[in-house]
Image (cartoon, rainbow, N blue to C red; front, side, top):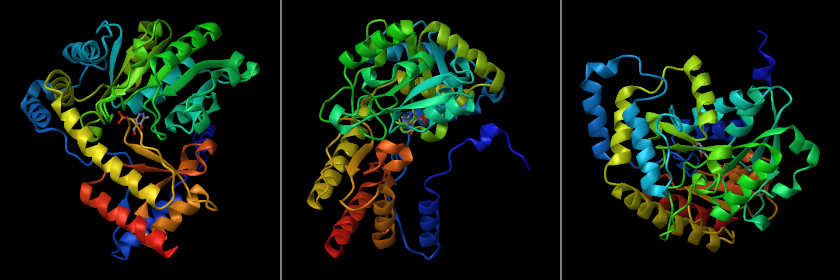
Length: 388
Ligand SMILES: Cc1ncc(COP(=O)(O)O)c(C=O)c1O
């Protein structure tokens, strides 16, 4: 069978060997403690599920939804942005609900990228920015995020010929996989850079609500003129433990939102309405659950950092996100270290190379496993360290 060049161009699944090993271990009846995927273990709060169940019983919600989402949901999203960030959005023109942020992130490339165009993407980074670009026929240019530069891209080091071909700039803070954060100064610089080079900006911010020690991440939409040049993708996945329900949003520049709406209305039929009602409940009711979840993640973060430091890995405690970005021990590649932990003590961590070349030398540990799993996983790390 001959696949399209588009499909052939998709990157190989880098974790294939590790996934195989996990499956083999499980088949042998050996358990695995996984700090792998960033999928919250804590259930969706009960009041959100109650609303979902009530809405599911109503036959009105059994029919095709509108692809632009319920007006009440768009208003709830705008209200949440106002309350949380002080940002005003027109719910009819500047807000678009998504089937999870990932869906919009992949589809927006179709709005701005023609064959030969460049999208500037972070390295390491969430893989969908580059994959969406490639599927649209474009070329990703990888902007290195280095520890020396606090995992922010050095915009001034992007070569002139690349910038000339670039249409779109991707940024993501709090960052996956590094856990780095950005401030308004940086976002203001990004707006200036985008204006100077006629770029559209896509900021991906699904982790703004997962933060520690009282820190409150900012939204790109708070930057002066952000709405003139860009949109922000957000999600209910991490804020309210709703990864399984698939709901997120894009907000910001009306023309960009309209273009994404046009693409989407031709490809999907929107988000099941019962889920939209659950999202309205999440966004408009008490936000106390966010603090409660963050307290849980913060304790786990501290335990993980303490153990990593104890075994000689100088990982820094992130201010936000669900991830610890840890250097690997000397003499190991990120895949070798991840494989060794899995083989020797049944612990899964994600090799940094899976997020780009600049991810080499690091592994990512996600905080989304139950406390007992964290404790067990960490004692296994200590065991590995003692035996090595
Ligand atoms: C940086 C980043 N963006 C987007 C997403 C996708 O979010 P959603 O569940 O809303 O599709 C993730 C999920 O892990 C992510 O890490």
